[in-house]
Image (cartoon, rainbow, N blue to C red; front, side, top):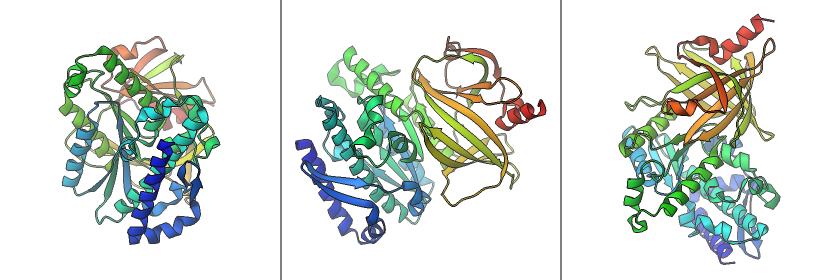
Length: 425
């Protein structure tokens, strides 16, 4: 009961913020038909049914970055570092703090009740409150005179750690306006997960939490929670894991900035992490994975050095459409830019590529296997991972590697794979 009252009071406080902010009040009137505040026996439940992809005024003017991670992962310092560097490059940077702090709720509070309906009702109320706060901060960011970056300290889904896959997929049964997959894939433009120092920099972990005095149970609990948070976000179209493999927090900061700079098309002096690719003969994964059905439609080239495509992503019967542009520079570097398509956009197709992407995490490294659907021969399997992954991770019993694909080998670019396939028909 107390938890619901806290959320109810937070909702009332949010209402005062809205009504006091005149510009937002005017804006809110345009979406009032999609937003309802319902009375409940347990307090006030804020129900959002706003389709974020249709709200183009906000979507196109604000870059939304979620910085998530386990306990003692350097999240606060990383956000401060990103804010300082982005503001120095002319961006307006706004921060939405962790909602567990705003609502005074601990992440583990969901697990205290043994009754599913209590857990799920609280989870849905939390999600609705989070979305309302998110829309408010997005509006503030959209009013900035400079290009705005909105950083979220912790993710919307982090609060669901411990519920388990079965309950994740039941959110809409308990009143959520969006499915788990929709919340994961459309809430942020990019998600960056910082691995807890307990996994790779144990000395620093206990330095920051010296009261625990090298207690291995504390370290193991932090690592377990970290992996559960990672699992929540695997499948997001722009997800990165920043681990502690370099044993140097300064390098971790630089890798974080490099990832964000890639999204914003900035040169910050750090080389982005490159991908390694391997041609597989077979694979058989036993660990949890997310299967993403992708159909890429390549567009007629408009500018030299740019490749454009429309991607249809299907995850658990949820379809999303993205416009992706890859820019190739004369120095050999390349950059990817992506955005969600609006419902009224139509594009001209050159050719279509069908593939299924399997995403999974092994030892804090994000892997993907692309299975290209071909007509003339058996499907082509391409394994991808960051170059920072240790060689031993590629020699696992889950797959058979035929060879490593060199960056200069164009035969295994997506479009070339399809062209080669058609030439054999």
